[in-house]
Length: 171
Image 1 (cartoon, helix red, strand yellow):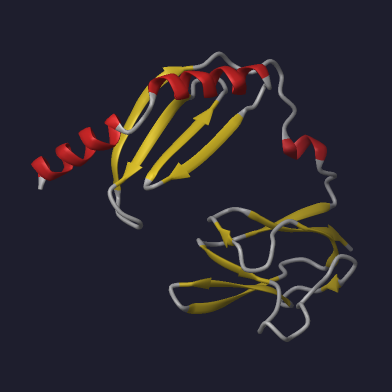
Image 2: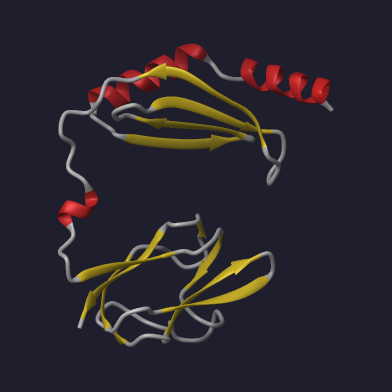
């Protein structure tokens, strides 16, 4: 098993084009991008600029398998006082996030109306959407009373754990 993982790691490392990686880093630095993630053919590259963080590359042997390679590559300089998202959101606004990885659905079926729309008034326990995970349909409910002010995800698209789905202005 160890030899197999070493072979996969070596093969995946060889698929990374160092020149393309350097060009990508230069563009991200010029555009002052704080975070970038890209996945192609089983290889995921995630770059985060900030204090104490490093560029990492995670390679996966197959979808859903544990990481085979996770190595710090290049430390990047901290960003100069980048504004944080939480500083831009008023205190009376709450983000509803996905509790797990899955597929986001606005409605209970393709021909049904969406659970909520921008401007909908919601109360705790009201269904906002469905996240399909491993063929199970999981209803995501509102935790606060308020009004939907923004829908941050598209119907039928995959979502990650902790990804923002809705923005609710508390009542």
